[in-house]
Amino acid sequence: MGKMATRESYGKALAEFGSDERIVVFDADLSKSTYTVTFKKVFPERHFNMGIAEGNMMSVAAGMATTGKICFASTFAIFAAERALEQVRNSIGYPHLNVKVCATHAGITVGEDGASHQCVEDLAIMRAIPGMTVVQPCDGASTRAAIKAAIDTYGPFYVRLGRLAVENVYGEYGDEIPFTIGKANLLRNGKDVTIIATGLMVQQSLAAAKILEAEGVTARVLDMHTIKPIDREAIVAASRETGAVVTAEEHNILGGLGGAVAEVLSEEAPCVLRRVGVRDLFGQSGKPQALIELYGLTPEDVAAAARSAVAAK
Amino acid sequence: MNKETETRLKLYAVRMRKLILEGIYRAQSGHPGGSLSCTDILAYLYGEKMRVNPEKPEDPDRDHFVLSKGHCAPALYSALALRGFFAPDELDGLRSCGSMLQGHPCMSHIPGVDMSTGSLGQGIATAVGMAMAGKLDNKTYRVFSVLGDGELQEGEVWEASMAAAHYKLDNLTAFVDFNGLQIDGPNETVMGLGSIPDKFRAFGWHVIEIDGHSFPEIEAAVTEAEGVKGQPTMIIAHTHKGMGVSFMKDQAGWHGAAPNTEQYETAIAELNAVLSALEV
Image (cartoon, rainbow over all chains, first blue to last red; front, side, top):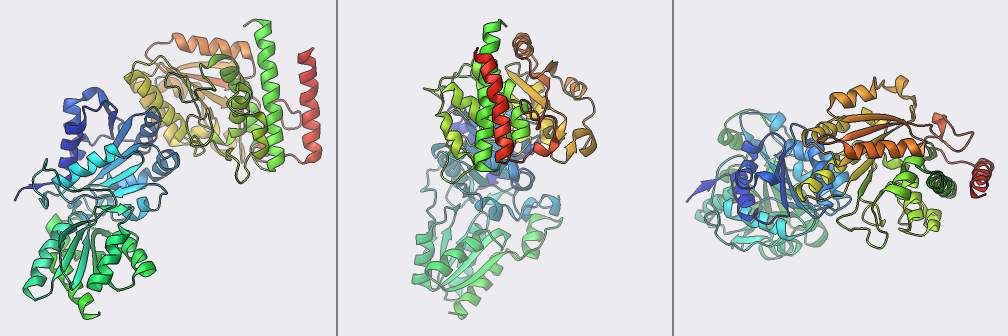
């Protein structure tokens, strides 16, 4: 099975769909890391480097979007969602402009750069902006589908992408897959527990489901690629049909996927819930795999949370 | 500029000033000082210069305007109303629940508002984006923006200024409404700005200094800017906060305070006297 970082698939998707002349791409001196350079090679006249000035990049993209362009603005998640937050909120969110903030290097698997660059708060932050669609694909094919959906859907988007190369879940980049904004993808069915995952925790959760299967526990696995609007129907069904839910995200357990799922469950269908994620901590330098183990994001960690949830039913 | 045009613009401006004060008085909330200082600039832009059409507010070929000092929304609203984008009595609802006229400009609901602003520093950056789009699409529209002097303390102004020069945005003309005062007092005591013209020159802009209450000087500067190639133009407009109302002039205290009934009536009487003299 192939591997590709979602940031790399993002660049490929921009280049693939870039013949649409409404598409304009902005970067802040990270185009080789965010892979917007892949678009630049094909459409240099519609790629603008804004220098190391992320807040300004967001406002400029907003201004350009008022003229009918579909603007993509990319930098690392920490700068997109946090340094430039107020520009994203006031210049893009409030006027509901067609800007797609595509943030790479999200989560702790940034690795060696350490906590200053490991964004574990962005889902919580972006989810709180009215009208913002928040998406996190898990592999190449789903990133391509997410970018296509972002182009086809008017309005502000936050697309969360990773640095680390990850195993394909849906097939190779370029494969057409089912992908609807706000609709979770059922990857594996089960009756004992539902694991709701996003980003690279989808792969970890599928591996966890195999561990659990060997123990006689069948786990449903949902790829919750859209964090907002969240698929309430799939969450309620998970609660009613399996009676226990585990969320899994490479993000603080506060306010992100775990928070969103907890909100739906507590309002509509309470059940046992366990949240796998970064437990309200900053990251640190290290190899991505070492950090995944240190912060409790391995398949075994997900399986353990599922066992705990099943036992508490 | 001929006398007839100048008189027409003076009338436009005094009518704007009346609407600004009426709106802020009814709301008992708003920013009269800075609204009155940039009134003549907006009167020239909307009363004379800009190619805009109230019947087609989103015409892609229109000239664009961004009020980067968004708290002076009443000035923009009154300019738009007098240009025919909506009825002047909409100002009666300024800042009140259910009115489209939000405390700061909102492009989603107000015809003629090209960008939502209010958070300082962001407006000029969005104007840069509009000007870049104009270049990309070979449009002939021009982009105008008005900044506050205190706003220049925001770092994003300089990020945007660097980008405007880098992308050679000669279709962008901005003004600094340089009235010298901000909420807490004179710019120079709050956070000294140094030489504003030197700063913009160093950032690669063509810079012109004018009396921001003189229509012939405003027109000459805007015309000069149109002839500049490969550079954006910053017009440093020396203005008076509270211009047009004797007791508000040059008073930092009128940055964000509404007049009481007595003050309002005094102000309107002053403006009516100017209006009568001009109408003769």
